[in-house]
Image (cartoon, rainbow, N blue to C red; front, side, top):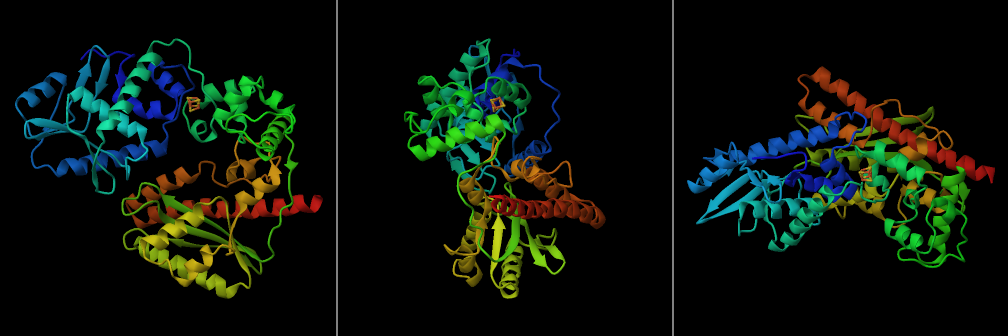
Length: 476
Ligand code: SF4
């Protein structure tokens, strides 16, 4: 197999789905700052390897392919299960190693183990499986062994996605210049190439740094001559023409004010905040997106509650060894029930819709839709209070995103700092797996204490944000 730096690997489909420039970087190996290996990525890799090993163990006999030539020999010998078959198409300079080739009658079927719980909407997975089929010249739909134990067949129509992947990667391979792209906080902030791209976006005063407009709206603005944040900041909402994905005065006004705020660093008030009167219990959950027993299992439900001395941290923790997901959920409902009795007019203050979504999912998972506490929490005028919506409806902030940490850490705004330097939702998941795997109870307790500290700081952050909002309202 003659491969070189320009070889396209089927696994590059992940970068291809993420961003065309990311895919270009993969093919052109840029010089960037040394990057620390991301512990969350490492965890995903470990779990993926474990899942693959579990699937492999289901086959009584399998042969591991050692090379492209060996793969061909195993195919010619009609080996029933070939593990890690290796393929290389010299003409396309394309290499791929699916997890399995399974003999069915006269044909081989490609199969892959994925941690994902579904392939729906997952272009990278579809592109990978379609390209593996192409390399293996398999006519049968591919199989995917999902993370929850289900097995699904891919759609033969996914071949179109596979073809797009290969042809777009080929075009990127011969392109000397980085492809034009746009800033997206969700995509760029965790990306290993952010140190190369983000300064460039800032230098260009790129419109897509504005969280109030989509990339497609930025394209439309450029076509009418508004090419930078500065130009947008100097526009007037009633004079700005509609462009695709930026229509109507309300949205245009927000986009312009957001551009002004980013340029000036000013906080702009657009409406009053009406914080309801009551007892505020700050609420935040930590969940595992890779949990196999369900979807996004919660391992920590944390609260900061009012006490005579200020505020106290309370939580429900899913213990290793003996606790089940359902038991932790039941304790959460009992704890909330206790708060309902204890406080006259409680509000559960959270940031973003995630807490509400998880309560709904858990109620569905355990048939608790008519549970008194669930109905109370999820009622339209119920006690869940999403602070993010309130902030966004009242203020334009000089930020690239309205994430809790962006707002709270900013010294111009809330200026609340988390105690642990290295923390975050992905960090918390990594540490929870460390807790599950800890060799003794003392080590497990230490990790648990770290995660609790992080979660307590999350709820203290929403508390600090609430106080900041109150102070801002009192100023005006
Ligand atoms: S930082 Fe953003 S633009 Fe750059 S490669 Fe990553 S996702 Fe793409």
